[in-house]
Length: 518
Image 1 (spheres, rainbow, N blue to C red):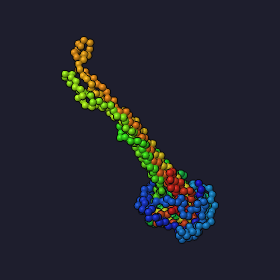
Image 2: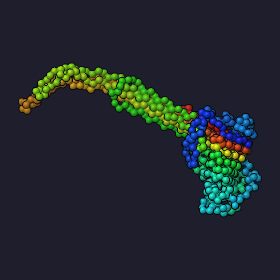
Image 3: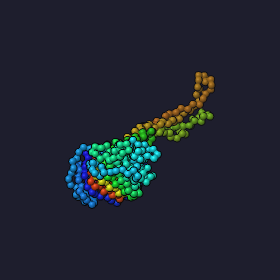
Image 4: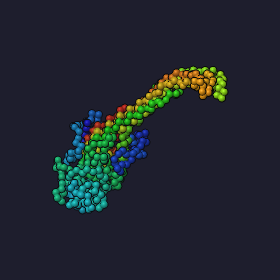
């Protein structure tokens, strides 16, 4: 997987307006529980389907250094020198900020009056949060700070396997070394650092949802789970809501690639023809139409909804076979008066066998299911919120590949033609003795001739195969995604992105890769 690296000096990113035809599409709902696919909501737009990279991404995969600018257009126009492109970035928490040993880190002190403390050696007991009795989880410490009116949560070095929701008015500050009850800044290069890692199954590591005020996260590493579930999108930080004002200061965000979309299921085979005797015809049923491929997923307040392909159409029922042959007939068939055993010739009229029957066509196969869309990898996702990144390192993995459409089901087998049934024609009746000597007396006995049915008709045609499902869309790889009238300002930050997810066959749209999306 290639990765581009962009050094970004002060730059404001606004949510780019979407075309009117696109804006009418459904968007995503909120993800109070950020697991699973968010549902579309009114007013959000779909991902562009005509590009595999965002406007500021280069086709060679080289990073670009974006000079100072006041708009997106200026930033793109002033992109200049390329930085070295190396192997995939470390996604297990990332390297510490490049100036972690700077004076702004080392000069920090804790505030016992306004602070709540959390350490991997602590416990989420009643009243936790002092330096002597820190909480165990960051979320518990944030809850304490909100309840007690504290302004800062101090996070000791270590790894915290949790997905957290920020609290408005409460800052989160990591990179603290603990010795007993003494808390001191941990700023040296190679320091352990304070790392939040989302557990498996959690899509969002840090959620800032309609905070109703400001919140700052500084000197913290933010990492996704080690691998995405199929079709799953992952986000390091997700900020949404017009009342959310979030500052990321010396934060390292590392997100692995989005999950690949699954292949569509094969269509169910058509039903075999059960009997003959269908209306005559000829030929195999037409194959079902291929399903439409996905033109891209959709974005909204809940994140990215992968774009799934459409199921293929059902095949047509096969035509019936040709008509059977005509039957044999007789007009000399009579009737018998059994009371007197008297035969009356020609009284039964014309008697014929049944005509031969045509075979029936097989049922059409069901269309294959559409391929599922690949998930996206987004370091910082912003929807309607205001976010500032100062001296941050943002790394997104590659977008997940879209799944292939499933093959259509086979058409059902036809039935063969059948011969017509024979008919009986009475030719005489009279008394006969059933035994020697006629000891029991005579009985009335009738004799018959058989009028044969027609020869078999032709076999029916097989059912048409179902159409193949459309391919799923590839996922996106974005350092920052901005939508819903949100705003992002980057200062002194580095952005690394992976490859756009490939579209699934047939014809699924690829994703997009860029430092800024869309």
